[in-house]
Length: 149
Image 1 (cartoon, rainbow, N blue to C red):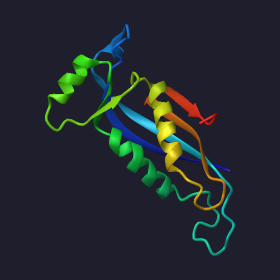
Image 2 (image 1 turned 120 degrees about the vertical axis):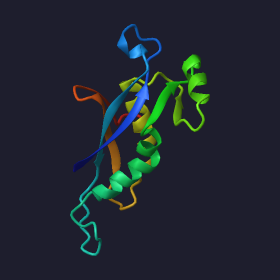
Image 3 (image 1 turned 90 degrees about the vertical axis):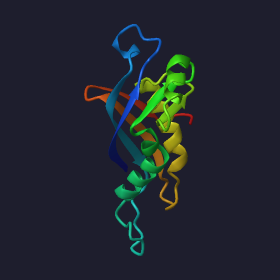
């Protein structure tokens, strides 16, 4: 069985090597969809009977390990030194430094790796992360899917 939970957050970024508009500082209303697989819990003594995982727990975990960290932050590539130094000069600014350009594709892969470590098979129902879909705009997204993670 597959289940999916959607969350949204706002963040700024720029693609310093891009030849078009994305080289400028700007922001997005990102949407992330987290898809998990697992067996439906059948134990009548378990409050989660009939579920793979409680959607509120899917949300809580995603917020604590990823979404709250990225929400209202500026996602900056460590090699983008001019912007990085500027952001670090702003006292209390929420900046997330990445080892890669903050493209939708790279952010989806980072999100998958981060969330993959967070969702554990605590119910014995073979729970695992299958896909992270990260929307940069309503019409553009990247999918990071389970493979050799």
